[in-house]
Image 1 (tube, helix red, strand yellow):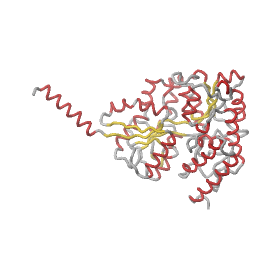
Image 2: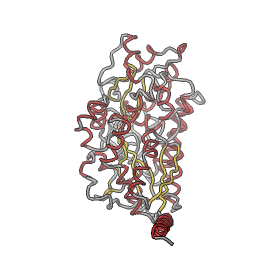
Image 3: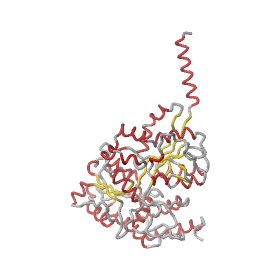
Length: 437
């Protein structure tokens, strides 16, 4: 055997040995645009970590929540990394279901995380998830349609103005609908929007004694306003539309306005994906009457490590890569600064290139700063949250209530019937859970 062939043989053996000892991380994530982009860029991580391979499980939002909740609660062990929200992080950390992220590396710069986001993914002073992107909610609207109708969007609009404008810019014969809002049932789908909207109307989920409030006028005003507006100015089949469906409608020019997560701004303003990219404006989430409550929507999609994994070190390596400043620069280099994951790091909002390219950056930060999840409602409440209530029971109750309001939007039941059903089921579940004595 020649020296050259011997060396080639040894190299082959090393490659085989490396493959045998490679760890495979199974990652559960949501089918949102930023996560799809992350998957396409994963070669950058595996090139730097050849001993780690990645297997993706990508699901629609409601399906993801159901699957990861079932898996972690039953200690199923299917996933090494989970994409979860800031609703789940403190609750699951308290139950011992998540591992603290203490191996992200010396150069990760935890102190650069936006304070509100960092607090929302921490428990007992420790980080239990790393934010991939953060968001509040705001109005995205077609400036060309507003100009044509002689309308000017206020920076701080009221719901009455939104409703009037939506009806004026609707042109059903041309397939243009004045407004797109979430209708798909789910605690993180239609109830994310409706809880925020209800907060802005002065409603609350529970009073100080945990008594559900769907029998109060503020909730009736919210749901009647929503159903009536969507009937007049919303697209057909709205009760089946969530974030991704409304994003597609807006990008294709079928929506005049859309109230949703600030993270959508980069997608509606991207000329490669959006036919209306050059005609999009932004405003704060609406308020109602004399009330000054913008709904207090604050959310982050985060990467977390379930306690049942045997690959915690490798999982933290990936999380560090995906939520680092370097990843932001990787996306910027390939897709442009306007397309980097927003809402997690202070440094991004001091980056001159980002502020120049992302016309929505300042409004996104303003919306996030306007959120006060410690005081989500006008009236006093025993909970924190914003577009959700920070108790373990909310996941099931929120989805059940969302089904009632989705049915009202679809015309399958009246608003009054939907509110009564929401009140009855929430009273029943909160009594069963021991909140109502």
